[in-house]
Length: 222
Image (cartoon, rainbow, N blue to C red; front, side):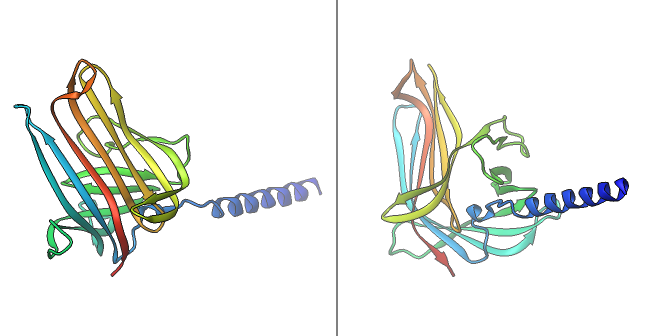
């Protein structure tokens, strides 16, 4: 009788665990990996040259989730198509084709042959990860700064977003401030990238470096 009761209790325990596990929401939709989904950004780039001059580049970027394709490891993901134009009246021209995938509860983007872990699921305030775990670059620890928060960009009200802090360094010779914001069912909506070599803690005294800013202007499915 005792053995029978024990077996029943054990069965109920595993059923309960299975139910709890299946009810966990991983929130994959923040990565926006749906075929045909597109996002258009205004992009501003500033390159600081060693002679003290700056080069500016302003353009529009369009990303599109393309057909399914296997990567070099045989994993099934999607083509990540990137188009560029100088102004909204110009035609789009293909810039490059990357690869995007959700695997092992990670949102990965292979950009310029570099495999980067952009998001980990389910997002929580305590999670950290090495964004460069699968490439040859030095370790950079990513973390979530805000989760499931509303956000407004270019007049577009977004109900739920994630902010991922990639680097936040400020010392005598370096200023690195890098973060990205992702929205549910869209993907990346904002990118802030500053990687500057400075002098004596002065962010206005830049010797060399790069600044890149993406701001979403529209999105949809085509």
